[in-house]
Image 1 (cartoon, rainbow, N blue to C red):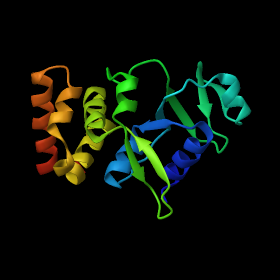
Image 2 (cartoon, rainbow, N blue to C red; image 1 turned 180 degrees about the horizontal axis):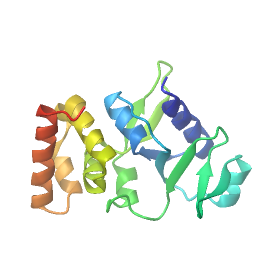
Image 3 (tube, one colour; image 1 turned 60 degrees about the horizontal axis):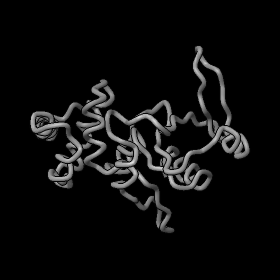
Image 4 (cartoon, one colour; image 1 turned 180 degrees about the vertical axis):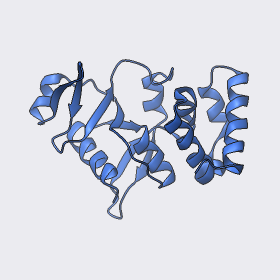
Length: 174
């Protein structure tokens, strides 16, 4: 099993209801991985600093910012109150996909494919464009365009995302 997915399983066991976004979500939907700096997830229930510390999570000051690490030394980014690229956190939780990650029936929650596409499109970093290309290559026919449209701000954004995803499907970046 991919080490980031193993860690996602352990984080879920540690913290309960979490929904992964970012590189872990891309892997869960496509089964294709890329290097990542951290594991990003949304929490359904707020987790206090004390609760993290009781579970042996660590807080470390790096370059003037506090970073959080799991007991297994993976850096995490927890979305608790801010939106993810203008997608409300509750919407991510309400529409999450639950994906089986092993033969024993272990599952991990992730942002739905359509929400992931919109989040990556809005982030618009090089790694996000690569992720969109991977998603288009491996999941294009799985996209529910009606659901995707509900995540967009307007028809123009929806039409641009649809156009870009078709382009990436036909002209992969990788």
